Image (cartoon, rainbow, N blue to C red; front, side, top):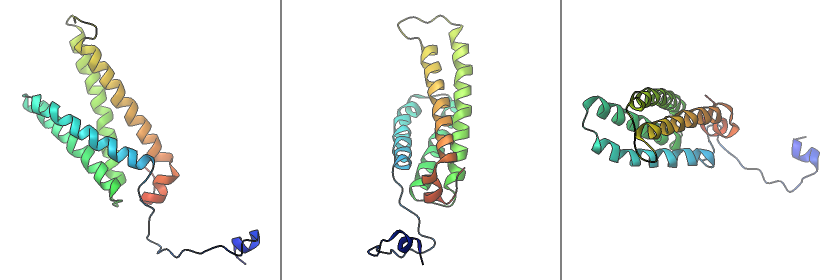
Amino acid sequence: MNRYEQQGDPNRVWKVQSPTAKPAVGGWLTFFCVTTMLGVLKSISTVIATHAPLYLALYITLMMMAALAAITVWGRASSALTCVSFNLGVRFLYGLFQIYLATGMSKATGTGAMSQSDTEFLSAFTNILASVVWYLYFHFSTRVRETLGRNL
């Protein structure tokens, strides 16, 4: 006797799925993919405006890693969680680097309503907070486990 017969549901329709079938990407996973790709598109203007080779390499690497993470999650690749964890770790470290840059900028006096160092601090806080929140989601979510096969 199966569990539906025990519950008294004789009209239950059974769906046959292959053991390797995974649910489609949806909900917060879709939100992660879309916002990550929009962030990559927004970063293109930063890359165009950057002339220092070290920062140019850093921004391009961050963009490529973010795009790779979003594409592998959307495609439900077996390497998706590896790409996501690497992307989130580097994004967290980049946020710490931004704090370092902002403290250097804050030594110079800023004018206006919001100085450049304040903008860097805000950006750093956003990067660090987003990295931690997405890490917790990918670590504890049952949707991630169902869609990608495991959690971080």
